[in-house]
Image (tube, rainbow over all chains, first blue to last red; front, side, top):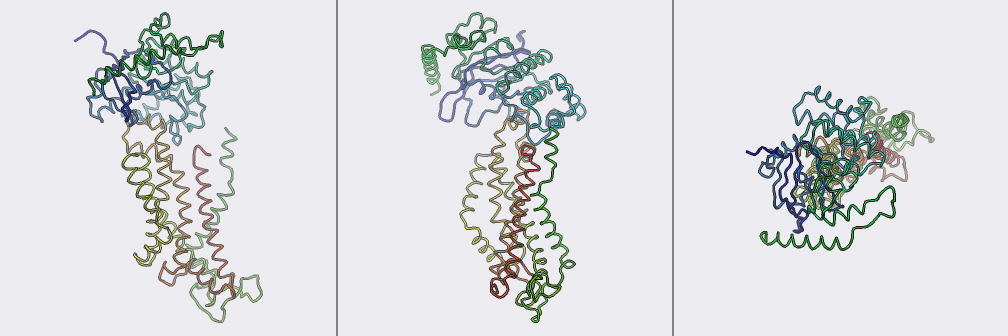
Length: 296
Length: 282
């Protein structure tokens, strides 16, 4: 038995295909250590969200995992019966969703909606769940818990709803939280507060987070490690500080060059170079060819 | 926010007018023997084709006049309301139960369940509804229960289609995914998360369907296929009124007005209820 800490999440060469055989995840490997924030960065359609959904067991039915293992605290998700897998995922993970507007049930009040999971899934008493929810609402700086708990989701602003969802995600003390672009749907001024809250709660609770984003600025602020994703393939993986100091892969460098800077917004805006994309395309084609040979 | 609350609780004229008419008609039907001024079946050839009260020659106690057999029109309308309401409630609830359940299953589970249920609905809707109803009653035999059964058999598809579409839309929402991640079972999610969000639509449809059931019952009575007893029905009165339209227009006009008001009230009442109870709309 090794002395190394068991990773909270360990994904080993995960590949997934669409119904038409097109590969959407290309032998993705990444791990998240306990208490660590791993950013998953890439442009739209790179498969970031797909990885999050695969971990949480909610892939759309059109996507099929054809290869690879996912280990949640050492337990191989692929080897578990569906029911046991659901229970394990439900008890140890949570999602902070992208769109707070549709992530709360519009016809149920916030209070019951938040406590329901603790009571029904984890078997807590109603009193304990209520106390826990109130504590978390306090941590996400909601000042009037009594009013908020009685509200319907549409009576709260987007920022407030995202706070509620963050509180709900941390309430059950999950080991791993998947944060799927949690600030994208929000106002720019609110984005910063929400990001700070997530970082704060992450530190206080020591929860590992797989943080999906397309925003390198967010990556720099919140994560310790980064995986850069392109077309379902991890092209670079590094400590966040190292990545920003010395990006290795040409695509990572191009991505950084394409990030606007507040000091000189127009001059520094550069689209990703054609040559870089061409290089990536041949890299992926070669990888697919090598992958298809043993898989028919 | 307080303004929104005030508006929400404000009086909606649509709700009160429609609800008011339905309440009056329903109470009159329930207490028909107490409310009706005359015996609806008593014939008196001395009193045939009396005009309504504001026209010369009207007889006190016969407010809306009499038909060609001298029977009091108002009393017949009140007693006719009994059958109309029984059919409306029973048929609409039966259609709602079957249609909403299948619609919820098709919309939430999708896949094979959806394909099978949707095909059945397609086939069902290819039948012309009124002819289908007449055919069913002809097969089942006349009588109150076969009228109710016929309407439920025909109209469950209305619920099924709408609830399927709504359930499908709700099932794509992130809160459903969140519930799945949390570890809820499929049936539990369907009943606890999806169902409450389609209830406003079910309520609106239920009310609309009651109006439609009233019309279908009137059509069946009109072609003499509804209730084989002597009990007056709105459709039956309209059929009789049609024969004496030139001598006594009121025998045709008043049941028509009653029918239209009732059907309109049912549909408006449903819409107003939906607007009031939908947490997003209100």
